[in-house]
Image 1: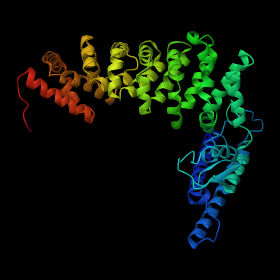
Image 2: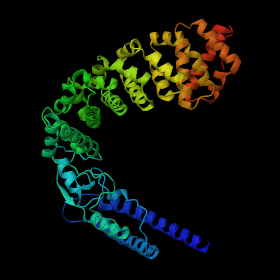
Image 3: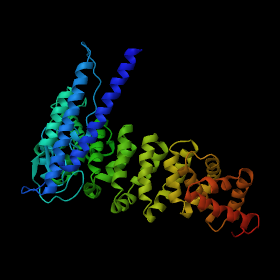
Image 4: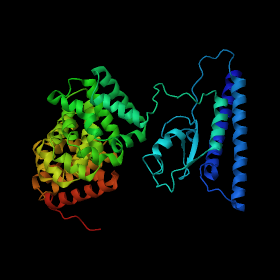
Amino acid sequence: MADSTADATEANAADTLRRELQKVLTEILNDGGGKSKDLGETTDDEAASCFGVVKAIDEAIRILNCLRNRVESSKPESDDTIAPVKVPKEFICTLSNTIMIEPVIIASGQTYEKRYITEWLKHERTCPKSKEVLSHCYWIPNHLINDLITQWCLVNKVDRLKRPSDEIVTELFTSDIETLLQRVYSPSSVTDQIEAAKELRRQTKKFANVRVFFVAGISDSITRLLSPLSALGEGVDLNPELQEDIVTALFNLSILEKNKTVIAENLLVIPLLTKCLKQGTAETRRNAAATLSSLSAIDSNKIVIGNSEAVKALIDLIEEGDMLATREATSTVFNLCIVLENKEKVVSAGLIRAATKKIKAGSNVDELLSLLALISTHTGAIEEMDNLGFIYDLFSILRKPSSLLNGENAVVIVFNMCDRNRDRFRLKVVGEEENQHGTFTKLAKQGSVRAVRKAQGILQWIKRFVTGKEPQRA
């Protein structure tokens, strides 16, 4: 019991030291460790600030030494399984996601690994983290962070040269990316083609500057990446592993804002993604939908995708796909329906039947209700929901909504169904629901702000058109 209490006390003391270290590191970075300044004479304020930073560094080193002593004193003689330690986020480069070996400061005041930021600055004039335009593209060594990382690694027995993850992915330089793409486009063998595509998938996922360079720095890169799938024609899924890696690499590339328009305008992209929505592994179908969702964030791309056969394929995936695939497809259709003309297209393609079928089955209810609430201003959508008897499913959701958002979206749909010419039959059905369960009275008291407003409107219609009683004015 005494040993247990001592261990708990020791653990609490170590946690306290770690919290103190985190606080000091933040102070150092805010007060000077993370800012790049021009050389020259220092003012009294700057001198005082520097003195404060020096004191903070001393305090950080003191805490690190205390932690080191505790680790040494508490370490068992034969301890082969040491729990992994959490690396302070200030020590990790956001471009490489690993502990920095050569930390340098750029003009924005942010610190990065030298190799990665050097490659980034070959193609970009912005800070990867803050996105601000840099006044210059030079960097200077961050000796302060370098010393602190060294001390921390000594305390925690961490080798700075090793990556913390199981999968070691070393970023390739521009010539290597070009070579990989060439192996995909014109392979020496199918095995070599698959290996190259898999490495491109890893590179585009891991490194932001690879995503930048791939599209902006290599001629005809998207066409060459997709050429193996294009060459297969209708049998695009004859090599499912290759298909999955290429589609996923394309998704990774689409994450970058400036790549979205370039990718969508390539004549191969939308037709091939449409085929991949229908064919291939479950992951391929999900990632094809995710790529379209990413591309549809741009207004001009909403039109391009809305005018393609991808609309029907997305709706089929909503109906037939697994939970994740349905979520990605629903997200894409939601983006498309922000453009008014696309609402008619998705309704004609069978969205209402597919979405209501999934909701009745209890799958993806949150996402699909949001989509139907968006599209419920469309006359054809309202009529089809009415013909399918969906209003009764909405009543069930409203009696016991799983969330405020679900209740809000369900009542918005009911409101829009009743709002069409104040249909008395629909209002009578709604009135019967209110009489039996008090559904809308409860919602008017407990729902979100928007739900309360819609529920109150419905109650007024019931009094006016069903019971024949005008609502009393407050």
